[in-house]
Image (tube, rainbow, N blue to C red):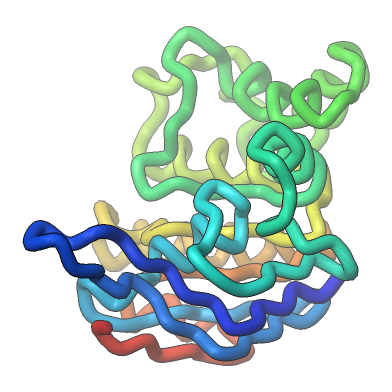
Length: 219
């Protein structure tokens, strides 16, 4: 399912009563199974672009087409349901729930998408084992290494085999070795799920897993 952005503008009120343009993007298409790396300086709207694609933020103007569904035209609750079913998200801060085990964190993405708890748990366990975390199924986030937390977060994003995975600065807190490993895990996971990937980053190393790079400039 291709994602097409048309005439996207995101504008916020300025401190002096004017407007601040956060993002101005006439056209963007993310194809099926494409891996797009979005780069640019701070303030260029990279994270805002992810939020718009995910339906977390509604643009001031423009269309956000997932296939033939314009999620920018949906009510917030409908955007939330669409995201739960069709989009995986790897947050910069990972956002693993501290009270849940690795399996429970991953299975939660499936139960929110409508799967039964039994099916969600079975699929979460199978994916974590495939990603080398079979020995950490019952571990909580604070007992996992940074690399293990990263893999759990990626597993949570791809377990429902979404059409699209969005990743926000996934290597920001990692050293070279850990970053390379995290990027490879992410690449393998989206390839396994057959998902398209949009990765926002300051990290030039992330370009290595991309099929295309989009450079944004500060507005």
